[in-house]
Length: 343
Image (tube, rainbow, N blue to C red; front, side, top):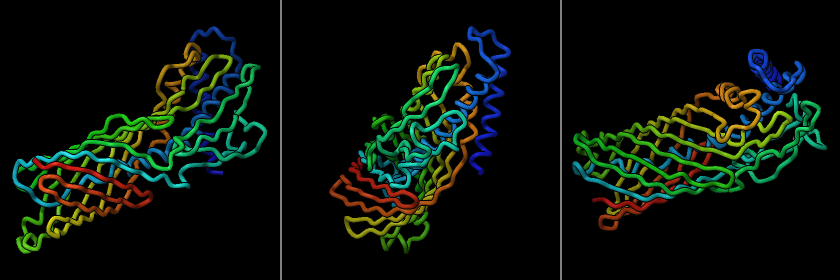
């Protein structure tokens, strides 16, 4: 019931925007009020679908960006520099790979030859169904978008740090754009760590270390989306992009056992989400600015979220080389392995 109410409110807004454009611009097409209403319903259905399709992926992106920031809470010598190559491994949960649609969810489309269907999220498989509707006396028919069809998402990145005065350390991370099946993923960020076990010499004597870190990261994830053709032209919403700004607050503790350091991390992060359709605009833009309308309405599904994670990490020293692995857990599970060199 709540979903239907939300859908109806969005539909009214979309129809109003589309109608306002038609009535204030000179358009080539002879468009009836009924067709304007149907375009509004079509966009409303696309908006509903986009929310359920991409949100699991952006939630997952936050977890991927949260892991393995702490190379060590230990205070090092001033101006020491470390640089590491890491590989992140994110495990996609079954519950976030699919969602159910039914004809009662939609106002324009129907599922072809069915009343309900299970379809993939952006993290799901490549199963597809057809959605059909009618606009301007012609059928609108398209396949639902596929997911990445991967049970694990693996990507490499570089991370480095430089020890500053008074037990501070500046850390930074950068990954190139990683190609996924049906999409791309990229993360980068920076932060500041402060060691506070330095104020407790008895702890330092026992090789016990504590630190706090504040970190900012940017996650950018995009997917192939809806390729919809109508009598007015292609809608131009073939790509859906999720942009996430995340602030991480991390408490870390470690104990050294000769060359091995065991690290535990408690992480709280707060993320702000933005969703946009991008890419080449469709030919329907000559009639109505679909991308602008959709992007304005996508602001309504963006909401801030807070996550709490735990993480366990191990680090082994071989001369100036460190081998490190970690596992972070909460709603999702994320693993990480890395090789670092300390200059």
